[in-house]
Length: 432
Image 1 (cartoon, rainbow, N blue to C red):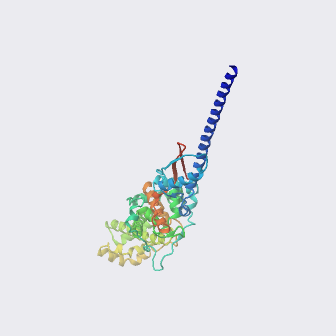
Image 2 (image 1 turned 90 degrees about the vertical axis):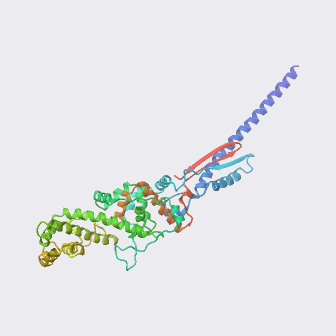
Image 3 (image 1 turned 135 degrees about the vertical axis):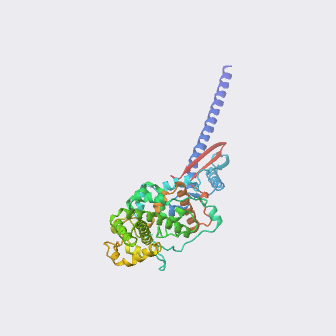
């Protein structure tokens, strides 16, 4: 009887021990499968991210990979089948990826990618101008004339641009006030650097009708101008920016003129000789406005020759003189017959006015054409500026490498889930 009880007890103990061993093996197997899935999953996310587009990185310091959810699923299934083959009889389930929220064509994601790839701490160094070169133009093209440009007529290309043709620009009054507050080259650089990576990115990679940013092919010649105006036509963007610069410079020149007591005295004396009496005040205004406009035209020639023009000019920085203003059609056409006659009769006296024929030598201080454009760009609505920046990247990637390039088909991160032995594993990673 005792021997039978011992046998039963030993049998029970053996069965219990076997069950424990089997349970331990099962738990160990599950832990092993879990550990391998987690380890491999992290590797697979890195493998997907490692397929970033090299051209985007080389040309614009942006990291993103081309693909879609079906492509990602296919790659993960392939990795999973290879890694699980012959290992612990793992039962593989479905793979489901979700790339929503990682599209490079989303302005928020693009801005984040830009900040990661183009460090804000390096922004200020890109405003030295050393990397920008004067554009080589046709010998027959005069400074201030529109160089030959391009336009985009393909409706598919236009319809898929990130900006979607969004309208918006900046007023001349706002530009004038901003220019007066910045005053000089250092002021523009400081403001652009504080504007963050977008301004530095534009300065480093975007060309204008006056300068080129690099040796790579650019579809539109006037890229800085595009950011300001947003037209798919180089000529339209050029003309719009020229008009705004003229308005800005004309207003600033009027301010400079009325701050210069010597020139104000010259204008007053000339008006008295041409139009004696109460009507002389109107002639003074006419001469001042004509002088500012004539000076502005010279400023534009200087800017389009990649020169510099001071924001507020001193007396010795003017490129035109009173005599050339009085001989201009703008003045002579507005004067009545009697005033024109007096102008001719008093010509010798006008010629002998102190400083009437004095002009400045070559200007070396002030803002360049591109820096005038950067003032406009910084005055733009931030969202419009970012979308047009994205347009240029997409246009150039189409022009340089892929005709069907679309920022919405590129992703800055990956998210997917796999099923193994009935357990769901979720992985997510992005470029850092």
